[in-house]
Image (tube, rainbow, N blue to C red; front, side):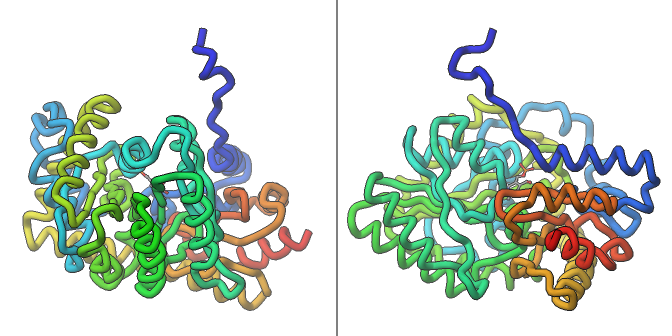
Length: 407
Ligand SMILES: Cc1ncc(COP(=O)(O)O)c(C=O)c1O
């Protein structure tokens, strides 16, 4: 019955497949014997999905009307303002800024692709990336093309970035670039302020040649990247950019508020041109209305309630830092043991995931299953969700992975 253009479309989700296998292993051998590193949500040392206590308290206290009332397609005004504040914190760039509420960070990426890339064009992202970017592009007739995130020394590969941008712009008049930093999924890598300066220099060069460039910064995991202002210093560089160099941020409440299933986020735009921002808001409103109509009002109210109260904001900051510290402890133990046993790991700064580069990720993940370890195979390696594996189960994990990689 499906339209011919849609026939055979299937979501290939290897993460889900290995996640299912982990569940089956837990049922067969007992939870305590299984390491499930496929999960992309924070869990405490008790392996239970974590909810920030202040979020649970305030969410449960909201009136029913907040859960059932429609919201404007563009989002509640206070929420849009607060999402902008949270995106930039102390490093708000100068310029015109607006935000459109979206169905999570996924919705923000969708709107950015739909409105800032041409049908049939290439969208650029790094090779180590969230797999869904490719599907989001393909779904609406764009193609994802990639550059190498890292050079031989493990630093940001500005050469690869620069030549990929030039290659694409030889055949296109405009380009959308997606950069997932800090706390990159799947590597935990982050661009430094210097990396950002070089990225913007490359983009300015092409803008001067008459090209239109949009950069979407996917900040889905920024709440667990470190101290909130220290991890945002690069954002000040978004001030006073030329009018045809447009910056957007994909903001999400999924991780930062542990509200994964509540589907709230925002696309934030910043430009030196008022017209660019007016157009951004109108297009966002239209896209929202025609994709999901409007987003979860209660989640929006939760954010404005917490951010509107200094004591609650302080609690939120502290509780997030506690989650961050626990993830950092797990990651440190893993990277120390990896160094000891000679397992190569992509340079990890912070975030939910660590990646191990390998030529045959599927085979490594299959070999790991024999040890009751479940991880996600990606195109370039194996992803471990340190966000959800407790410290005792991290111990010895690097050696097991090294054995599987060598095999
Ligand atoms: C890199 C990245 N960006 C964006 C998202 C979007 O998440 P959500 O739509 O739940 O906000 C995710 C979720 O896994 C992600 O990993």
